[in-house]
Length: 265
Image (cartoon, rainbow, N blue to C red):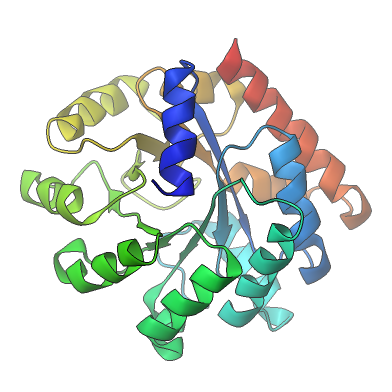
């Protein structure tokens, strides 16, 4: 079992729900990325999602777009992101790390080179937003052969055929995008999420994480009642935007602790 699979299985055995926070690597400053990763773990994260900055992040709303722009101004690349994971692994060998990004940086590095470098750095999985699952069977097999999980997105508009294909190629967990739109765009209808997750579970036997639009403890708790994990991104980036850099680590840890407490109540 991969680190992601082991972590989510242990949570399920203890009747707990997973908490998966997202930050963009390099934002608000490159030297803060690894301290922020550790702060998220202290705040109760079960799995970390680390965004690879990209100039055209099509699934992201304005908040994460701005985070990508700030990171790119520092020149943060995929190589740098792998370096942050490597540095994080020096003192944390157990928390799974998932890279979330887009195909262009990965293709520029080369798929085989990326997989080898990610494995060496201590990455546990990847979400490549613009990789269609219908065209990713070889990539998924190579990831799994190297002990890493290819994770794919499902949306409110996903067809039954797409759900079945994601079930075929993915491992670790499946990421359900709860909104028709970009990250951080609107409020979640938890009743609709419950219905869609139930439909997905007919085909997908992996744990299901739900993200896009989870902004507070109450929403996180409601979504966790119908999923296996909650993913929070834009709201954490907003916390970073509204906090002086020297207070960023403490602010993020405090915010996530509140979400963790709500999930565990």
